[in-house]
Image 1 (spheres, rainbow over the protein chains, first blue to last red):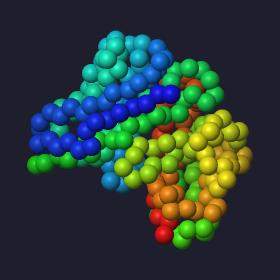
Image 2: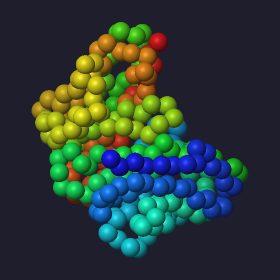
Image 3: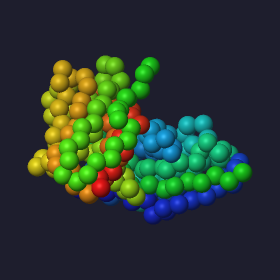
Image 4: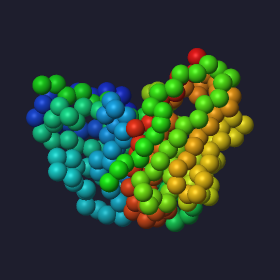
Length: 118
Length: 116
């Protein structure tokens, strides 16, 4: 079974600075997707960034980028120029790429709470 | 485009009572998911529907939880009877397609359940 581990329960960053959130995962599959979701206090989960395992190039979305190390099974999120609105819980998630009916569920880590200080 | 709607947003019940949650997915989305998020944990899938058929309910406690998606649109999740350990946020998500497609799951705001 696949597992996702986020070892940082809480992180903090100064506004305009850069912060990196860590995520490791375990799987025997070779093809899969990895995600970072943001969950603000209002509780609506929002997709931040997605990485396909077959792609070597790291995904980027504006101020958000990932460092995907497939061999090490590591998938960290870097937030540049942090803003107050970035404060939230961040969840790392895994999804199989197998084309089967019961394999597209998201498997989440326990989350990292990010605080942003002015 | 309207997002995933859920109601109620909050519910407090006593143990052994029944409770139901409602979800309206994004229009046209074929796949609907119910996740349970216990405090301090990441969401865990309870059940997944493809249109009105169940695709995965392997982690649904079927002795007390039930869910349906009539007509392949709205869905309800019911707990009967509730236990203290059912206190959690219940998240509904939907996606256009499923399995292998690079489809994003869109989440609703969740229903926070407290069982006393």
